Picture 1 (tube, rainbow, N blue to C red):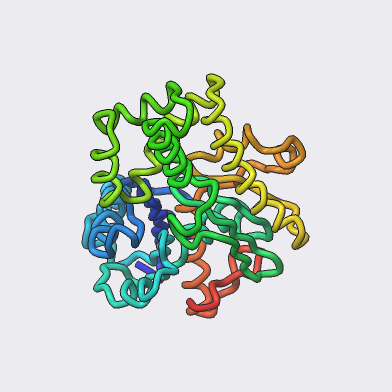
Picture 2 (cartoon, helix red, strand yellow):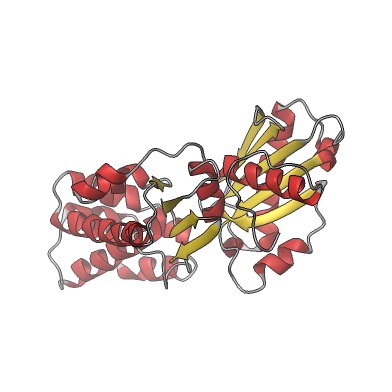
Length: 309
């Protein structure tokens, strides 16, 4: 297959969902697939099963059998790749692909957003991170994982809202419709909230972000403050890239549209729509990795190639 037609599969394994797309050597999309979360934080076995479900669905849509995955070069962008031992453990997994390259979901999103050229993205989704490329060099800010990092993310927004609801339940903060709705999800008491929090994931906390956004847009003062703080955190990441001389900026992720409305006007004006998504970026990384290994001419003008590929 490789001598006649090389095929590539790009995977965007995020904290809320996983998406896969199969492309030919010209970037033409042959099939797409989707499944549940695929971050390393839910466990490598569970994340890998989610990745393979998305890949199998993409193969089916492309008219390929599952066994045909053995002819594909895979680029897999996965959240939580920086966790200790995660990348090594992933490289030890027996995979069905002809070749596989693991990169972070943030790098995949940056490659897709700017077609592999210089630029930067800030991810505002379940988690948050800033990733940029300048002269082929990768820059990264934040993204160390919830709850110690990921400021401005859906998970952090949900955490702040639940903390507020508990204060309101104690009488330490004014009660509002936002607090009432959150507490109602936990039988109106701290006991259920505590039990839930002991096993909740970042994805679980992020599920409350749309609730906070709805109340914020309706004028709830606490909801507004939470979203204003989130926008400040995302804005700080964007400013880091501007200080490095990166002019092309994109905001991506499930909360990007909502967060953008709370940014300062000057930052909103600087944002450019992403060219493509993280699954496309992962496929681009797979294509470049394969062409490099085969010593073929590059198919893109940018000179980026993952340093540890």
